[in-house]
Image (cartoon, rainbow, N blue to C red; front, top):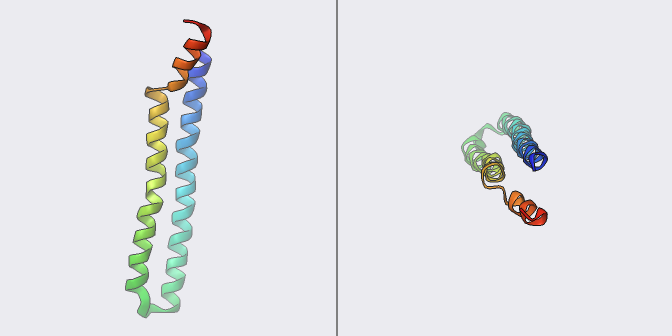
Length: 89
């Protein structure tokens, strides 16, 4: 049982870490492409900035969902109840 709890904690940590890593890479690419496009066509900067912030908001939702799922697995782990039922305890 303790092994299941430990593995769940590791899985939740990996879920949060990889979500944050992917978002950081996405923000880096998004910002770099935004600066490239504004340098090429400065007159489109307001339109591009609006679209960039929209995509940044959607991109920021990914780690928030990952944190929510990770916290669910840590505090309300459904696998522990299944393991108790399988063991007969």
